Image (cartoon, rainbow, N blue to C red; front, side, top):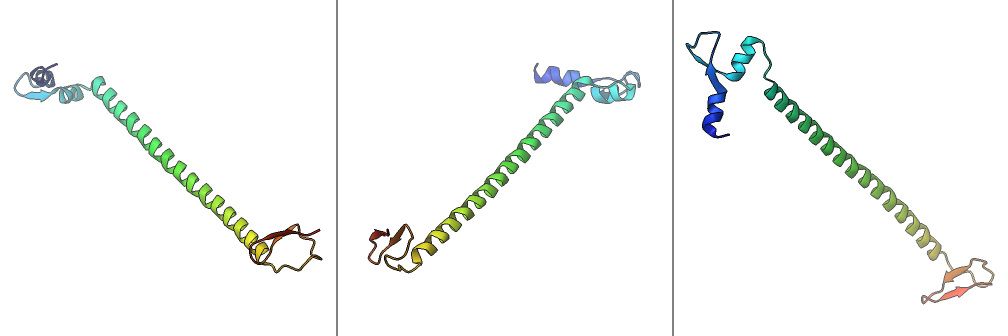
Length: 114
């Protein structure tokens, strides 16, 4: 459909004013109480697309929020494990009487207590 034929279909003689003026197709249909189904369909499609896009944006935001929450939780767990391990390693070595499985000796050597 060319631009000229599109313009012709948009403007038409108004049957309500007996051709004295030109009204747009939508205005004529509105005055006659008839819905322009093509326009209604277009607006419905635009609204549906807008709603889908809004839902997608919301879902995307929720996914990032869940990711950040899980990341913070796991990071806190790892930090706690490292703190616990560091505390264990900082305890002084008590000699062969100590029943701990392994301790790091001064100088970085490991010794297994029996």
